[in-house]
Each structure stands twice: as C-alpha cells, then as structure tokens.
Length: 447
Image (cartoon, rainbow, N blue to C red; front, side):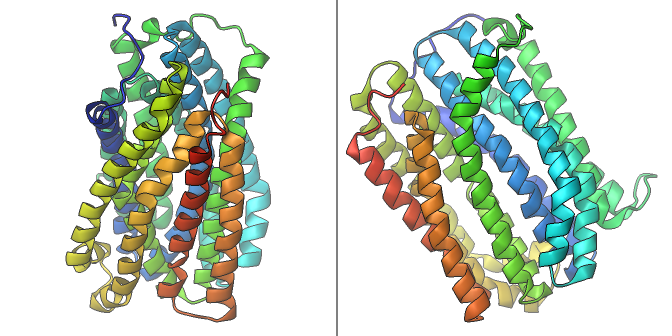
C-alpha cells in the first residue's frame, strides 16, 4: 500500500465517501441483532422478551468498546491530519492492549456482580435465570468484539472505510448460519434453543475479527502504518488512549446502563411490553445506522481538520454533516411509517402484536429524526478533543431521561408508548448542550 496524504477535505463528496462505507459496515451488526431476534421469536414471546434484556446487557459492554474505539479514532484522525502514519501504527498497537484489558474486566463483572443485580431487579425469575445463563456464555465474545472494533478506529481514522465491509459481511454470514444451526439444531448440530444464539454470536465475532485483520495484512495497511513493528509497550501511550477514551467509555456505558434500567421497568409491565420494546431496539439500531455513520464521520473529520490547523472550517463542516444525516433519516422515517406492519411481522408474533407495537413504532421513528443530527453534534465535540464535555453532556441528559422513565413507567404506570417518548427527552437534551458547546468556540486551541 503506497503512502498517501491523510489530510481530508470538507466538502459533501468527502463526507459521503467516508460515511457510506461506515453505513454498510454498521448495517451488518444490526442485521445480526435482528437475525437473532427473528430466530428467537420462533421460540415464543418469552424468548423474545428475555432477548431484550440480554441484548441490552451485552450492549453495555459493546459500547464500552465503542468508547475505546471513538477515543482512539479521534487520536488517529488527529495524527492523520498531521500526516504522521507511523504514530498511527503506534497508537493502534497500544489500543489493542487496552482493549484486551478492558474485556477481561467485563468478563469478571458478568460472572460476579451481574447475576446478583439481575436476580434482584427482574420480577420473573424464570426470565432472570434464562438471562443469566445466556450472559455467562455470550460475554466470552467480548475480547473478539473489542479487537474487532479497534479496526474501526484505524480504518475510519485514516480514511480507509471502504475495507470495513469485508469483516462485517463475513460476521453476518457466520451469524445467520450458526443461529439457524444452533438454535434449532440443523446441519447435524445439537439443538441449543435460546443459548444457541450466544454461541452463534461469539463465532460470528471471531470470524469478523480474523477476516478484517487478514484484509489489513493483504492490503498492506499494516506496513503503511507500521502496525506491530515495535512490540515494546509504552505505558504513556496506553495512558493517553485511556485518558481520551475513559470519558467516552463512561458516557456510553452510563447511557446503555440507563437503557437497561428502562427495559427492567418495561419488564414490570409484562412480557408483551418487553417483547415489543425489544423489537423497537432493533428498529432503532437498523434505522439509526446512517446517523451513527455520519456521527463517526463527524468525529474523524473534525479531528482531522483541527489537526490541519483549520479550526475555522469546523462549524460549516458539522452543519453540512448534520444536514445530510437528517436527510437520510427522514427517508427512513417515511418508509417506517408507511409500512410499519411489514417490519413488525418479521418477528412472527401475530396481528395482535403488530397492532400493539405500531403506535410505539411511530414514536420511535420520530425520535430517529432527533437522533440524526444530535449524534453528529455530539461526535463533533468528541472530534474537538474535549471528551470530558461529552461525559458531562451525557450525565445531564441521563438524569433527565431517568427521571422521565421512572415517573412515566413506575409511578404513573403509563403505557410503553409514553415510555418510549423518553427518546425525545434524551436526544433534545443532548443536542442542546452539544450545539451550545460547539457554537461557543471553547473547543478551539485544544490538544
């Protein structure tokens, strides 16, 4: 792979050239989530309800990996803006070690603290035990997942997004095959039922990891950035990555822990409400891929442009990215609202389920519009280098969110349709603070 100028331009063409491959890469994990739930839906409403809690629990640790990824991505993009490829390889190598260390902590927490918390908070003890058994298996995929998302930081931070799709495509194929094989016992494999999805997901993550590192090697990316040329560990580099990532890790983890709290409150309303909310998580994940792709683009491009010393181009750039993100979101929202039954019927729960879930889907779809520009502005804050501000924004937002869901679902016992209005509260609060910070100019001249 030949050395090239890593500095980015700020026009619409550059924005789309970065965001579209990221979108393709993000859609595959969401297809995996949906595939798991479609197959588990065949086991009945209770399995779909249990999958809501296990899915969000694993998502807590997945977003911790995303925090590491985004912090490392911001550092890599800054070095790309300064056109220092060897420093990028050094950052990536130390990011891998940081990811492995955090994954071990996640496994230990899942075997010690998680069972006590879940048994104490889930009312239906049958669901509680099923969830805990699943988690004991699923959590072993964490090291594969964390190493896998490190490739995001490298490829997105250096404008190599076209290679993202190979790892995610192989992961999707493996996940679909082993879901079908393990859950129902096809192709000579034992019938594992609910836990089969856990084994399938672990194999899929390992497959994606192997393929993407093979691509990085085959395309010469490892040589271009000097990956693994020096095996010496430098604590200062790991400290830098953790200092940049820790606020993001806390931000993402707090966000999903709060979402897990939301799902536990939903469980108090019964298995049907929990099953419906699980489908909404899938809708949010699938329909939100473009928003998150443009968010990652904002992180990378803002950091890269600041690395070039062009702070005056940052605000116009973020506005362009937010405008394109909102346009994609509106298109998906229209489709969701015209054909709500088509998506909901995939989960195989019948017409009553679809009728019950449709009003919730309409609330969720409107929240997707708010998400589309809010995450862009929040990731612009990340790209500016002040990840502590990201954490402050998240804490204030989550306080409002928790207060809302507790009052609506637990105190006033209102319907889950009103419960999902909490997403409006979340995204409006987040956007207001991120926009104010970027517009204030306080991010300028930060390292």
